[in-house]
Image (cartoon, helix red, strand yellow):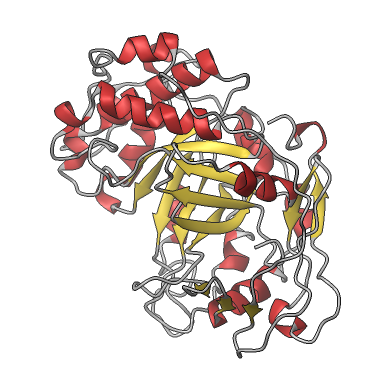
Length: 405
């Protein structure tokens, strides 16, 4: 991942009872931040769109607060994702929005009471065009015009698979609806990014949307996270991970690295973060444009027993902490896409004020190398890492926007 040039991963379905210290510390050492999803597919550990009243319970809150306790202490935890694609149909746009804001409120209040720093909380949306604008509007406005409203999302992620490779009819700025995204979110007051992208309807994937995402879309978008790191049955992986612990890069990895290497990272970092000065709107039913979308900003009360958790904390939390990373060489065998062993693979720890970026290398071309590749760090100044699962995404995000929180 470090040689790929990413600065951020997204991790789904974490177990907050396990010890994640070494894993998180390695990512921290190499300048890679983490988006952590607080929900899981296990019973009572996520909001059920078909049964919101029952699933929004103190048992559920105990679970998501335990994720906060486990990952909040790591300085490279960039944000928590409160929910993923709960509004996945037009019908769920009628019922789910108040509950999504309630969960965000509860998470932020818990973080405020029990962590020593503020961590952004936001939503990852399904690309349902009929309700997409209203989803963003509903979650990003301020109830009663209070900018400190804890139920307001700090960011809005979009899971988008509309750009589908060079031979697809949607492989351009207009046909993929990327132009509509810029128009729709042009006045956003919160960071917006692709929380998933990388259509695989045309294979092999070449990721020719990357120069566009980090080109003329940067006036609105803060980058994106490619779905997904390792290969599953859905054929989206960048690498294969085998049962014996060995790893093999896929052609998708090489294609993504090639696209990342075309980016002018210094130019991207020097861009003005103008969205941070945009004032959020006061919530009002008049902001909602579709007839079936929820227009009420009266949120569900904290469920029975939940406020005690928010006030006093959960029992016996498993609190993560950074540990020393003393081993930098990679013990497991890693192979390039052609099956050749990549020699002397190692991580390179970065300074606490640096984050990882693309460096122009070709990882697969290092199969006969005798030295480890050198990643290309960039300075984050006062917003360095000291101040701020089972599946994962990898990508580049405009970190400066998140450091505003």
